[in-house]
Amino acid sequence: MKLNFSTGFALGVAVLAAVALTGCSSDSGAENSGFVARVVDTVAVAVAESLDNAAVTGATEDRKDLVGPPEQNTPAVDLAARVRDAGCDLPVVADMTAKGSLLYAVYDGGLLIYDLKTKDYTLTPVEEPLNVLVEHSGEIYAGGDCLYRIDGAGLVPEEAEFSGNINALASFGPSLMIGTTDGLFAKNILGLIALMEEVDVSALVSDETGLWVGTDGQGLFRWNGENFNKRYLSRDKSLFDHVTALAFNHDHLYLGTFDGLYVYDGGSWKTLTIDDGLPCAYVSSIDASEWVVYIGTTEGLVSYHNEELVPVKKLGDKMIVSVCATGRRIIAATALDGLILKSGPAVTTLAEPWQEKDHELAATVQ
Image (cartoon, rainbow, N blue to C red; front, top):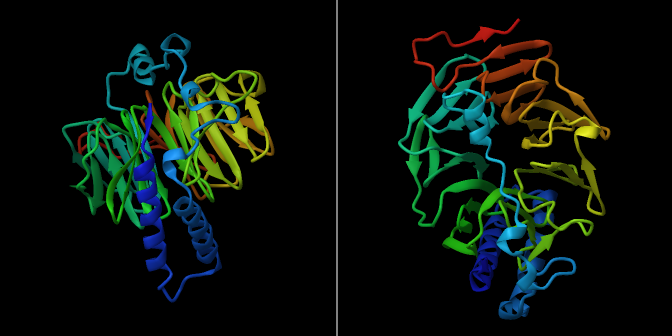
């Protein structure tokens, strides 16, 4: 794995420039001012220090130890293989996000936009699979073999040249962070900047002051705007080698692996496994947008609140690929049962990507 420090410095300059532009807005609030102050402090330090000498280490590791020998990395569990083994040969929703009444979902055949109010939907086909969605600066972006901006029901390719397929996207200040099978990139007013190379990025999420980077085989990192620090548990440094999902809210980081769920409160890590109430060890998706956190696994959906895992009724035995909470509604993309909406006790199967337009849009599950 290679970490590109000179381009990291360029990103810092881009952040400062964008923040300066943001500061000209007359409606900037206290929250925005706090963010500006944090970014300015970060960039000031970056300017003062030589990034050529920046330490990219974990709590106790040297840079050369960031990636262990290949034989020490356990192969990741292939969710697609599990879907095939379960007898499903239909396209499966890979990721979802909601904005207003619209639900955006991507799958290996294209983009589905479902209106939760009117129950109408549109399908936009693409030749290559789409893997991930994110909202950034008021726009919705989708990633696959290239980066798209969603315009109405259409997909507009963005000018961005990078290597690998996009598996993770995150909004981080003025930058759109792009994680691919070959590295981590930032897209901002200066263009596309490479931050990490030769690393398979599987998940991204930002917190108040930094960015968490999960990989498939090379561990968990946190970027503070200057350095990448590897994070791990001292009892077993390999536990975070394969990150399947990341989410952050209310000062807590939620990390999924195929061996369980880990919750970080800023000071200590809490481990949750089958013994604690997970339906299975493979965590496929996490939604932490509300006070109640929803954890999707390949054998069911559970909620996590007040340090307790509880099965979600009528979804507790589904093979969950992605989960999205919007208000009091839960939307679950499943491998075998389609796209499911749960609102209170009512459970409805929404339009599935593989359905023809003239098929019935929804069927209530009894």
